[in-house]
Length: 261
Image (cartoon, rainbow, N blue to C red; front, top):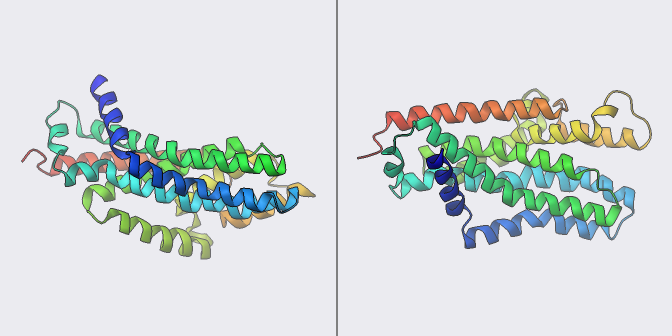
């Protein structure tokens, strides 16, 4: 257990360096700044609507995925590129355990940065519209979204040095265009898994029959989900499944490759 905690601690420090963390924190804070500008120049109802239709997809569909792509691809990819992964391989630890520790560290680092942006965005909504009820849902959605992207990108980062480019292309083409245009494949969208968790937390009780303001909330979130059913537990189960597959795939790849040569 001490070795595993050491791997997690060192990896978090490696991923969240001073220069990298400053740039990523600026990116994470962008939706909060936009929310503040919009909120102070519109009515409370308009600010709430913008949060659901503008700020929320910006946090879950843009900033959190980009942060997770960069940090997730570097968790094992940086070790492989620097040829330091052999030091890990020589330890008496199963490859799957190493992969799981790296995944946990990358997720923690990603959530620390992306979660700070989500917290600031929810705070901006609270300050401008007086609504603080979205904070918990947004934080849970950010954690789920981050874990899904980190799990995928850790495998890609281990395989190729162009993982960030591949991840950004995937985010733009598949997550941004294909799943938004075709409801049949929207369930494969990682950021919509996070959005479905948010919808399940803040509007799950109103999803069937809703009137007035609740009806508008449900309509906005339905457009955002593109056919994905709301639910925090279902979204969490999906990304945990992705994470488990990622760990076992990496364990296989790390055994198949000679890491100590």
